[in-house]
Length: 390
Picture 1 (cartoon, rainbow, N blue to C red):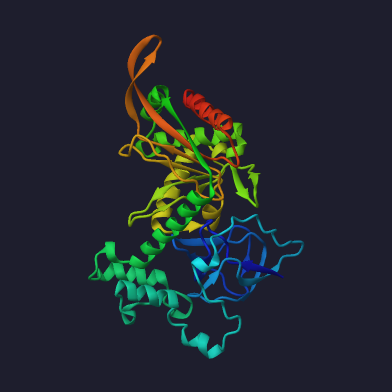
Picture 2 (cartoon, rainbow, N blue to C red; picture 1 turned 120 degrees about the vertical axis):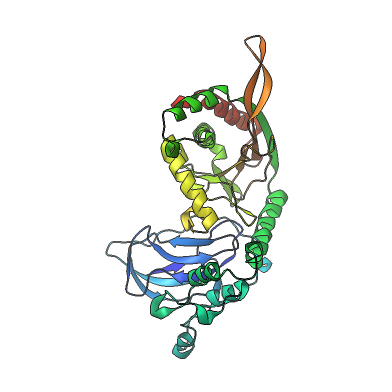
């Protein structure tokens, strides 16, 4: 037997609300299966399981908010299977910052049956969106009304309140979560910053020629060049692809780049592009589009929320010239890219206009120093001068 626990989906998470079970008692589960959906302050996240076996007992019902690490279910392991060791987890903010009720392990059958028709999370969302439950058809087991049913009903009936005011509680909680994480970052991490102005002429020219040979749907954005070059540069300076845990640096073998994504209703989330250094540009482009789409639709996986080893923020074509960000703990680095600019540069003894980008590295002085950080920016610039090799 093994316990399936409420996972940590980011360093600022102290608790999560179980929205829905995707598996039921008696169902077989395999590594990578989506077993449940959990609501955090930032998103609804599809939670994966990393063991093979059978879901034996459910300990927490949909609608309950429980602390990180709370057993959610009991899994009977398959023959020869061992429960996965708990990965080193980032230290969350003090529990007092977000008080939550402890779950009740034993529930009277009558009480469970009494709320079977509508999950508490769905009932709360219905109140927020002004949806009449009597008009909603449930699609869950036994006709149970779930959050997705409420969301569909709200879109169908075009409720009186505009979309911008639909979920004030979620947006407020997101801003509070971001504020807590960034305050902790500013307070605990000794930041230092280095910047480099990178000549992007070769990268822009290569990308233009490359895209001429492609169908519109298959064209690359220059952002994927930045992601791939950043991931490869981290191989040369692994101290920046690391976490600060238990007063020491823990370096990571894999490079999982957290991509900062702005959300339509406001706020920011930075899910992981896994193994960005090992993906081709085509794979990165496909996976980046998918990740951004799902981040904005609120359908991320738990591994995408918990795995980033470094964060990249790019302001795009309409952003500022440069960005100096705060590191997301327990990571030790954040790389920011401003928009593409035209700047005069000296090339071969002549002053010419060139497209450039300003890259800013925020680094944790406990894990790295200026020399290492400079090596990273030098490697990043070198890689972007040879875009055909990325």
